[in-house]
Image 1 (cartoon, rainbow, N blue to C red):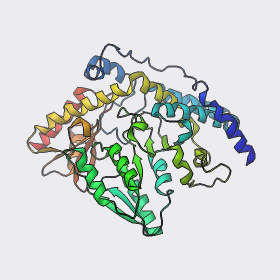
Image 2: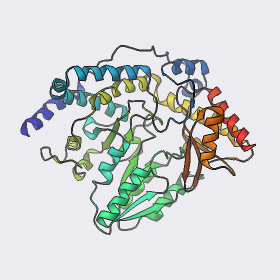
Image 3: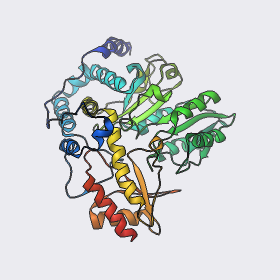
Image 4: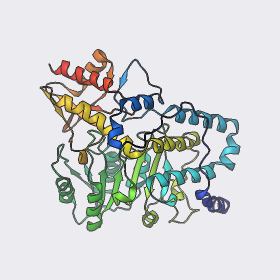
Length: 422
């Protein structure tokens, strides 16, 4: 055990080392015109057609369901495959001699992207793992309370419900408005659910059902003022919206990297502010590291290292385009289809259009049609793939374009909605 601790301390100095080497390019990336603003570049269809060639897309289906899992660029795919071959050729040698040093270098790159310290970052398999380390780990006693919303991700909700059954805590549920008129309306809804017994609050940065963006900075400020720990679910916001974690003012943040960062399946990230690490116990046993060392949360057994190593190439692709450019393009695509769909009689939107409260992800419904009927019709009649959302107040299909999505793809969606609503 002491040897492992010493090894980790030795390699911690590698955080400032050179980045993991870039592998052979599968498809040249298009040059990003520096003279154009993100808003100008967002509508440059010639440029985005070049970007689309960085992806391998099934031509038989128009995929507008990229919120579950985003496709990776060909370079990222090739990097992943090369790392699989590398580790397969030297499995135990790699795991014993290179695994930890490579992870430290990768954490440094992720931390730089997020605007935090590598000593505050853990690489996980997904957002669920990252967030449940917090939800199941933060100390709560019988009678303590947690605040969640009626639009939080089911896995997070179930984790709180499990603590409710096991430990006797109480879970209070906020009813989020689909079309808030201002940030204070959302903040007030959470504030009303907080009591003197509230210990933890979950705030989803970007709602996976509708694409609504919550004012998490204000919610983190609210929690801090009330003495409530705030966990931010950033599964859909990281590398989708252009921000750095310090701008959110959060102490805890979990995300999936195989969504909008376009990393391989099975990659996520957990951030814990340094001052808060000591109070988060590992879900898996580790008695070798100090409570203040975030590496205590990494002892989860043998990990899919090839998946993680390819994150470095996904970061390069993201940085090549630029976070502001990606956000502008995704918002433009959402606005393009949503504005056209909203003019169809019988069609309604389940998300705000205000740029301050919306993203590239959206949700649309048709009066008199179930979400499943809409999704099935679009797929069967127009080969447009979406996902039905039947979740309390949210009744519609989720539409999530991606960087390879063309305006012609969105025209198919709008034509299908018009035909079905007609």
